[in-house]
Image 1 (spheres, rainbow over the protein chains, first blue to last red):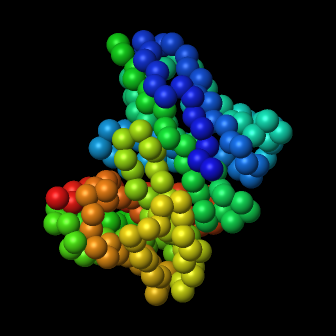
Image 2: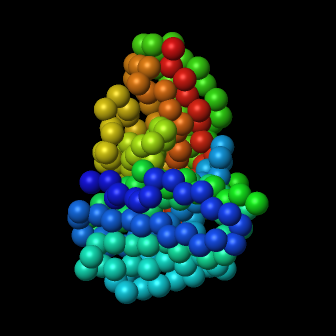
Image 3: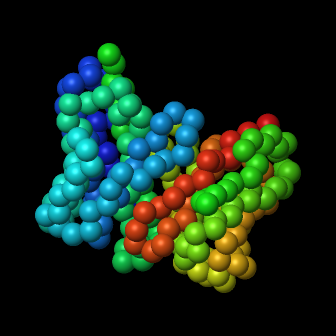
Length: 111
Length: 111
């Protein structure tokens, strides 16, 4: 029931773009995106609450295709500070307290 | 504003010992959750609570107990520690459908 993320790992040079995908075999009520730096706690990036919604934070944006049960995170002109592990999360059923996460995508940005 | 506070930060247990991981939040959030994080597995939900007196199982509840007597506190109990419970444990709280705030984690080793 865990969402599935792809790719598992990405290595980029500064300034390059990346896309991280999140898909589910179950209906997606909403999609949360988090980033975790090594040795730290996950930190919230954004939440998409309805199909077709797109959001952005600086050069990081996301889309949510409710029909395809997919979400994608777009990192544009990556910076060193973007390095970390990215997780998508989705509530299991309509109970939003039961948030489950994908296995994570590790992003490494090199100078 | 302390946010979500977990104690201890590190713990080593012998197989068969019991212990309680503490979690407290000062944001008056209804929802609280416990996750474990293992390499390649992402964040897996152990137990969660939608309010004082209400708890439910997550994806991997076996070997763990929880209770929620107050809004602020959500302790996780390991009844009889096993090496398979070696992991990093995160507590999170959220005001319902919104952002989940994570504690700094407890690194547990069972020998």
